[in-house]
Length: 458
Ligand code: GDP
Ligand code: IMO
Ligand code: MG
Image 1: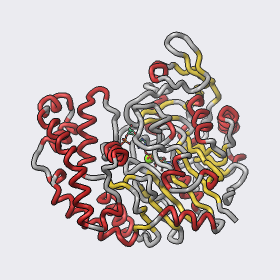
Image 2 (image 1 turned 180 degrees about the horizontal axis):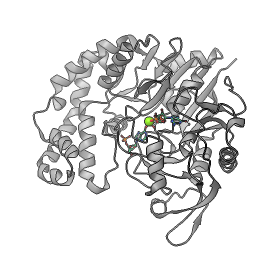
Image 3 (image 1 turned 30 degrees about the vertical axis):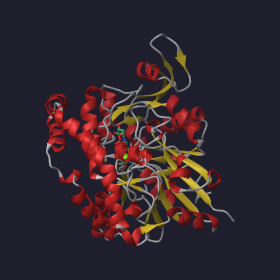
Image 4 (image 1 turned 120 degrees about the vertical axis):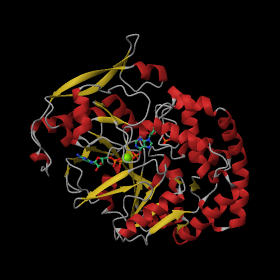
């Protein structure tokens, strides 16, 4: 009997609580696979008051008996991965079931430099990337200049490939070096200046063939026991009738093709990408769980129609502890955007929705949800506009719903929730056209309300 693939996908601009949802659903799965992105992601799990933040390792790792895989679609910084592995080992986590695709691409030191340099060069137009080298690494993959995990296992091949990839980088970064002064001026504040300096200092071991080859061959030795044909491992599980979770990073509106381009990440976080990024077929996917916060946040630049710059925004920031897991940046906060959510529901063909952080809304007298946009010219948009300029100037039109005062963190069933909270959830589910199956009422693993019962999967 064929098994079920379940994709967990971010429905907004990231940090919706995907890690926690994966941790919960993993209880009834055999394997968990990350299929895109890299250590731009930060997925948090809170178990018995202990917090775990994962950047590359799948959020199923706290179950020692489950297979946890980093799929071919991920871009992997081995230094970060090894740091994560060591950190987890120190905390007593068993990593014996961690598998890494031999086809995943490696984030190289020059990718990180190029990411920073690119952002500085863009100045006011910068994307606000995590500066982890994600974009340049995916660019090299498309250019067929990428270095893959399997290349770590043969130093000769590794050196040759690094040599081919490095040369154009040295050129590009040299040009930037020439513009050093100008870049410094544009960089402005201290943090950027520091990053700029790292580009400008030469010779730099991060651009030296010999140093990089040695360093990466060393990583290869350490990672070798984990390297595997992860697509095949997925097929084995699925063909044996097991459930496999596909853990998305980033989110729908950061999708390279369908998000708010160019203010997006460089991979495809939508559910369809699980096929490419893990090596499975579309019909292997049986369910798609979208994860959305009860409000909206965004890190980095780009359009955000429901963004708030007022007391409510500050309430969401503070009560929701909206600071980036990866970069520590303040997240921009705003009301729930149902136009965008409905778009995400259709794009991913979600079968279930999870609403997290409902507890953060406690104490707000009135809740607002965007139900349409109005363009500068007065045109009404009921659907998510594809045109960048419209989206940038779109003014949301809101529906108002009554808020709730009570602290809901102790609620464990739908009946425990205040009537206004239930009405809010019903409104969202009705508008989005997909059932809400899980509601988050606190960061802890147990701080959830299952609607219609814990599915035990299927
Ligand atoms: P991810 O990237 O989608 O996995 O999300 P992050 O881990 O970056 O950010 C979500 C944050 O919200 C984390 O700090 C979680 O511990 C926290 N969180 C998740 N669900 C809830 C919830 O229902 N209520 C509250 N208050 N916090 C939550
Ligand atoms: P998780 O998986 C929120 C954002 C960055 C920036 C844009 C491009 O934790 O939800 P990149 O470094 O990917 O080239 O940056 O994407 N971004 C995220 N925002 N959560 C994430 O991951 C993100 N990963 C990237 O802030 O705006
Ligand atoms: Mg995150």
